[in-house]
Image 1 (tube, helix red, strand yellow):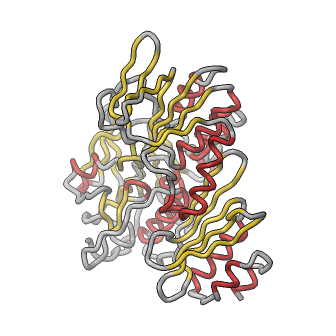
Image 2 (cartoon, helix red, strand yellow):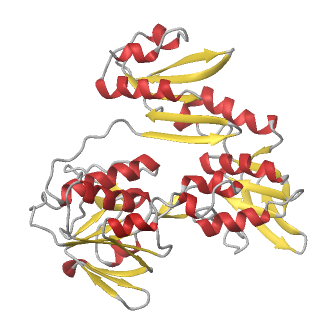
Length: 410
């Protein structure tokens, strides 16, 4: 990894990608006092928020303008130039970005905030142009047009995106089949108890749940046909695949930067080239000893990496971030998680009305490592403090629903 930033005064910074990480970086640079030129390059133009694509935007309750991360006036007032275009090449030594129309933008530093592309199914028919994905507003618009009363939608992948779309599709009157090889999905994110509760919500609300592995997708005049390893065939008018993303590292790779399931950066989000940083879904931290950390894809991670890169670019102290946090919504309930639910240790369940509502994961030493909750944002917030502050709490108190978790943080 490159050495620490030499704090040479910067006059211009180019950000490739207008998602949450790129926008957060620009906003953070201005709030930290950067007065130089700031440019965001993105095919969509004004940056917009992605989480609503599977929820409010898909449902039509929020429009394109409503999910913009800031109004056009904000970019004018903060002197952030938004260039609508696609970056096709990067020349690190010159800190130059080449666009698909031949334009070149040169600055002092370049930050890659390129995000990821939807992962395609590696099966026959997985590359059909009629198989839907959900990464952009255009994807959401295309999906919405398929959601008509009586239309049958097959969703492959019952993770966060798949579950959210399954929930959002029901008000359109569509029939939904949700396919996943694991029963229940999301155990690594929320623990087995909550994963079971959440997955069981689908059939309770009319979603057909199929556990199995798709082996091919075909299309004819009657629609789509998903063949399963079990021998079953699932017929559908539309098929959506939601099985995660592949980090967009093409620019970095072509420029000779190190990549490994993400553009490799140090803890200041700096690549091996001093002129180039990377943030968000497409970045992955490699520690000084060579250890590769797991690449994260959550909304808050995008915000945090933008803040870290901004501080590093300006030679300021790097911000400290708490345990990782995520949220999701389905079938009228709100899900949140913090920390890690996958490490060695024990699980503590707090129940409400006879069902799990908050699940805690304790490490072998008894300290809280992770927490997930359904409609329990305050509990997750308190759990995050317990994790960040390394406060040891008796398991019995975590399990007792009459005890306010917030009081345990003091």
